Length: 114
Length: 114
Image 1: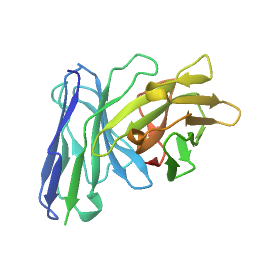
Image 2 (image 1 turned 30 degrees about the vertical axis):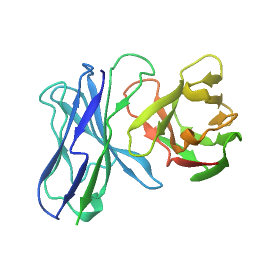
Image 3 (image 1 turned 90 degrees about the vertical axis):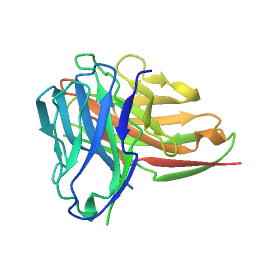
């Protein structure tokens, strides 16, 4: 089954404790992206990657890091989480080069930073 | 840059009644348009998309949307809703020229009442 998986689905942590949210896709997609969803703001892009070893900032990159060492994986790293990073996070992937190609989303990770 | 405005944050509607969710966008370049749905505790899935051609687009689960270039709108409609349509709906745009970045609206929460 074609899918994007994220782990963990729920995470409660404390300020300053480094964490990683994993994302993996099995569709051989070149493009992967992280979004955060906040009430009334929709989804905002954090970082994206056009292919292995190619990453770039989205609209709200502050406080986050990513890496793309393998095509299927795109982890999101919070080196020193703060309460304003409490949010619902989605990973997405898509192919490139096809006009209007659909992005496929993971199930989401709900993060609470206290 | 692009921006997307969903004019209603919440839409209560009775079962079997019609519903319309409004979406307006602003962009200096030509865009593709999408509607995604997010059911409770799930990721986003594509309802429909407009790439070119007929301005009336039909999607899954009986939804349709009409692209209006002069009004820069892409409103979503369903003639008769079911309880199972209770979800949050997101309008999004992506530049035609290059890149995969989706810009989302703030979302419209639809609550279908029996």
